[in-house]
Image (tube, rainbow over all chains, first blue to last red; front, side, top):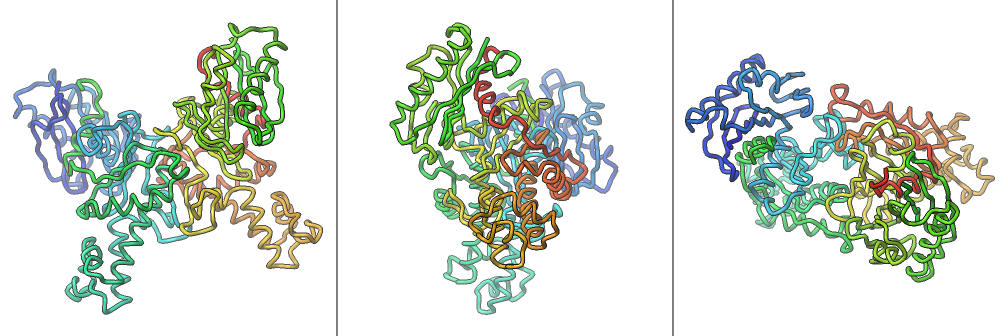
Length: 318
Length: 318
């Protein structure tokens, strides 16, 4: 059996069909056009899947179901996107609406949950069945996989690993609270801290690397400057490792997953990032060496994780 | 069928037998004598259960199993207490050792997990099947119940809700880290903060309530003094609510339980405590009023929670 996965993003809708061995056998995408009514976006999602079915010359009898990863607050059980800032949706009955175009099973989840599931089924954590994934981008998304399945929480609005406060009263977070993991461990937060450090130390190499324009700061510059021995950049990077490790230790003390996965552009730092975080973790996790401290790995599937994970929301046909 | 539950504490071993309706039909206790070898303590645990069976005039064929709640880091799957500071145990194969005395099923878990399970099966959360419990005492213990079962984490050392850092680099915690929930929301932390506030403001009523000796401070005094309008006490109490609510909001953003339960002496404050925390929560939880914000309740079973919860680790005979 085949399964379809849709990764609904603020910019693009990506759709793919996977076979029984978790391989994407066809994929396509289209601009989201999030300014349009939700019905139109959903019609396009349906169109993409039908187009893929045509490419593969299969009909719905060969499709076990369609999974969708959506940004925002997703009520997986009810099949409703409660709220997404990214695509300006509020209470969109995605499963029902998409169901107008298909008779197969349709399931939805948050996009970070899908990315985590994809990596567990076919990526950096396919050797285990319990993993946590953090997407380190504009924000911090979190996905929790327990026994090979997405853990959504008992009611909608769980698994929001980016919105765990780690510094009470600290930096403002997009969620309205202060001090959340997202406000310290996102790429946005790293860039903010690098900008501040560069502004405070005019001699910092980071200023040069920005071409003298601090607004050109990106998430790579502090790492590059730190490698060159720049003190301000070293501090920014070391603080970032600390924030990330403290956040991960918190998740470990709750979930003790087999593996912790990181994704996003910061993962370009590879083992420099993961080894540094692992070093911190060995001191931070409850029980020290009396308990299992999971390894930290970078995700490997890139954009495919969302599609494969979404498809795996459908358990039939696996 | 009957089930036996043992609550192993630093001071006392409490044992009870419950019937099919979650009622404790016989119970007893003995001093732990934690300074003795573990084998002796375990022999006493077995003796207590056998004594209860005699009282009830039942033999082992009527006993579905025995559950034990132990302090410390418990490996429920392996049946081993990895480490407990309270009773000075390290790698004690509790299930195997206790199994020398019985042929029925034996299971173990952390004591806070058992308290949570007890409250869900027979106490303040018996109307739901997903709950989180925080024990606010010397430390902060946590129990997570998902679908009516204890959630241990994927490897031993999970569900340690007291050891989630909320103020990076803050107050030292017993776990070796800084800024954990335990270091701010335990009774110990409340008393520490009340002592500091009383010392800093000699006119604070809290000094009088201590009989002029700050070492007499307890967890009730700041609440009592705040009721009398004492400004320093009001601040201590308001900060305590904030710490507790920030911690709970973090758990809600991960688990979205149906109910959050609190236990420990601080619960004597009743609805004054729970209402204040609920007010904070409504602003802190991710998604605001677009998502379910669980009610906060005080546990009601007291010491019985540990026995009933431990017995419910045995699912047979329920």
